[in-house]
Amino acid sequence: MIFDLAVIGGGILGLAHAMAAARLGKRVIVIERDAAANGASIRNFGFITVSGQARGATWRRARRSREIWAAIAPQAGIDITQRGLLVSLRFDESLPVAEAFLKTEMGEGCALLSRDECVRRAPGLAGAVLKGALWSPHEVRVESRQAIPRLAAWLAAAHGVTFQTGTAVLSVAPPLIETSRGPIHAAAAVVCPGDDFVSLFPEAIAARGVDKSTLTMLRLADPGLRLPATLMSDLGLIRYLGYSALPAAAPLRARLEHTHAEALEHGVHLIVAQGADGQLIVGDSHHYGDRPDPFMNARVEALILAEFAAATGLTPPPVVSRWVGSYAHAQDSPMFVAAPRDQVRLVMITSGTGASTSFAIAEEVIGELFGESVAAVPITGT
Ligand SMILES: Cc1cc2nc3c(=O)[nH]c(=O)nc-3n(C[C@H](O)[C@H](O)[C@H](O)COP(=O)(O)OP(=O)(O)OC[C@H]3O[C@@H](n4cnc5c(N)ncnc54)[C@H](O)[C@@H]3O)c2cc1C
Image (tube, rainbow, N blue to C red; front, side):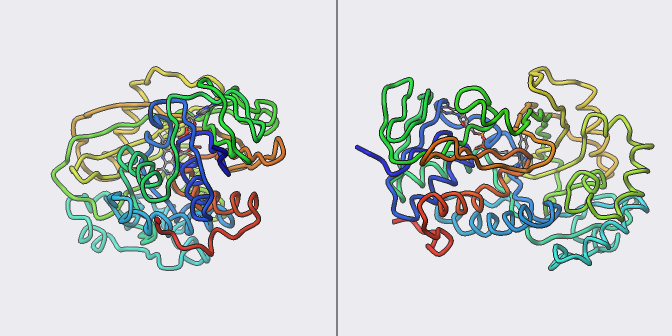
């Protein structure tokens, strides 16, 4: 059989491209090296972040991707475990950042909550530590460990996408895709290799100045309270470009460089997501380089838990599990698309935004590759 499209990589970006092509009625095969996707796409928070994404293309793609997550979740049996974002604010310098954000186009639908309103929405958070909170209604949160396999199963069942797992792709030159299990034939290919920079088109990847960002993640026991939304702290206001690029962020950055130097040195900021079972997914830290350290640093864990305690006023519940994850990172660009060969696109997200932007990126790439508009096609199975 000759497929219209071979997608290499079964992470969220590969699945998003498979879905976009299937919406156009293309015959699609996804080829994944592992038995199931096991990389960044299942290790993340599952937090589809809109507010805080870099102004312009990334923010626009996050809004579109969020729409697509919301449309497919019920069809694919994916639970939305939280909606919205609460950025708890405890420093005087944080309030002007939130106010400046609200004045931009990105602030539409968002609001600055008073301390009382914040505690009313999130009983259990210690109001004493808060000056208020920035509320955004745009986000959804999924449990990636569940969502990625369910998305793959739905693409197979409802869209007729073929999956070949346990298969490493060795070379891509349509119509011939050479794999560790023999040749596959496809008229076009999209390569979504995540943080594998060496197997396919290494020169094209090296030309983008890409390295890896390694993150530390924790799962904490159910604290006995329900968060109304995914939570971030003040530290996020100087990390997420939608806030940090605002001039109002400069005084907060200066303050945190003084008071939180060690946390910033390890790229620590706080996201707290809550699963349906009440457990908290808490992180993270960022260490950059081409060789991710597989050994978790206990000091980094302590810094993350200290930020959790400071932002919520809660004693951190016991740690249930720990893991590291890594993603491709480039200093100047959140993603890139290259055309290393005719009918081949290499797509790489080079920032921590893949859960939030992949669906929109895939609509653009597949639309360009096949010369048809994907966004015009409804998102339903056959
Ligand atoms: C800890 C952590 C937290 C994060 N939190 C968030 C978040 O909350 N929100 C958000 O938007 N983003 C988040 N991100 C970023 C997001 O997870 C990534 O941007 C996204 O998962 C990248 O998806 P991908 O499909 O490109 O890569 P991956 O998930 O790494 O998938 C790539 C796949 O390609 C396969 N592959 C590679 N080469 C070959 C080959 N030659 N042959 C066959 N298969 C191959 C690999 O086996 C792998 O399964 C986080 C990342 C991490 C690590």
